[in-house]
Image (cartoon, rainbow, N blue to C red; front, side, top):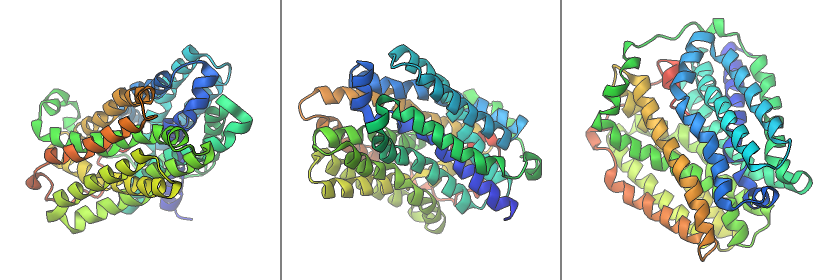
Length: 400
């Protein structure tokens, strides 16, 4: 097996493992609320706590990967996720889980950056890098399907035990992958320190809007869809989790596909993005109905597939917009999506206290999908073919 293949397998395994904590708690939100004696809004804060550190450490994580090596940092990330998950098993104490989830965010930040840079540094193709992005999203989707299956015998411990298992599995191909030295050192950009100028660049704001919806909103919905279907749709936890997982598993296919479409039909990228937002809104509306399982499954499939389409085009446009500081531009877009997760995950949890068992929140999300179409980037900002690979590990920080 070539070094490129081994690095791709190891990097993708790392991506799946560090994506698991993103949704593992939300997968059994009711059981977590009962076990910890808290409301669903507080359960939402358990996810918010993770994203506080995950979002704030994107660029520092990239610098660490550049300095130490992707494989080494990836192994450290797995250790952090496993250790903090094990600590969370000590007792169902809200204060403890808030602390451990905050520390888990350190591992997810390091791991996401290390994973994609490991694939890139060892010659991974654009498809391999897109596959990494899709599988990282798929790891969060897999947690939605698998954690409820473990709930019967692990109860509130299920998210953390399954996370440790995912880490143990991922550690094997990563440890057997090629050494960091075989991949060479990535080129560096003088512009990585131009953070104030990038933050003031209004050309990036529309790209932030795209990612805030396509990534941020899809993660928020993914965290609560199982709860919606279990409560409003009166499904079993296993069935609700299996259907809900499709919201994130769809990105395994659509993230690589979105990059291909943006390269092949560059002049139609804005139209493609608009269509993906319409489809995402329709899928979310079907989920808001919380009707028969077949209808909910269609909604989850449509939403999951459509939400992944903008990924490649968005980051390609960001790095083209600021060629002097591509990593910082991409990180700015990435952190905008994380901001949505920080704010909206507990807010959507509050919607379950309103009539309709969460339907109101999902209906509002469907409207947001459609409203953001008016804020899509202009065609001239999206008309160039995406870059084939990130230039540095810091740019890779934009690939959650």
